[in-house]
Length: 178
Image (cartoon, rainbow, N blue to C red; front, side, top):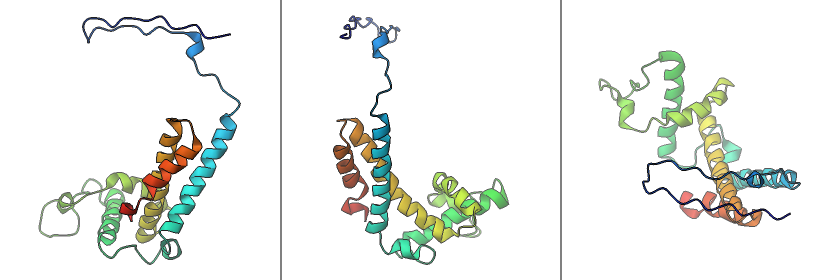
């Protein structure tokens, strides 16, 4: 049976006054038979972006424990992430009182503290992964997750997995990221 059109509700004259959107039972999402196929395509896409992140950053995956992609910022970022780990579990509340620029007060505040990323690394560090290895895993994961998130956005707007993969490739692996 065709879905009955929803009645139009005029907006109230004042933007702060509440108004009710009509509820129609047919507007609820019903589980469809393609949900399993969509999940399989999403999983394959996540695997694709993970493989592409390894391929595009090669030979980084081969030397995760001993090398970085660039001799500049990765060493500073690795040190900051390692300091976040150390300060959180060994020094308590003195996160910003890092062991650099002595006798300066709160030297970590002079740079990015990237504590949000550090919290994602805490489980890897707790498993015994070294700071450089954890940093490189985050680099690889960053490319893969960026591509996959763009894939999800690109798939959801037009409803096409091909559009999602194209969006993920452009966003996750554009040349300016390398």
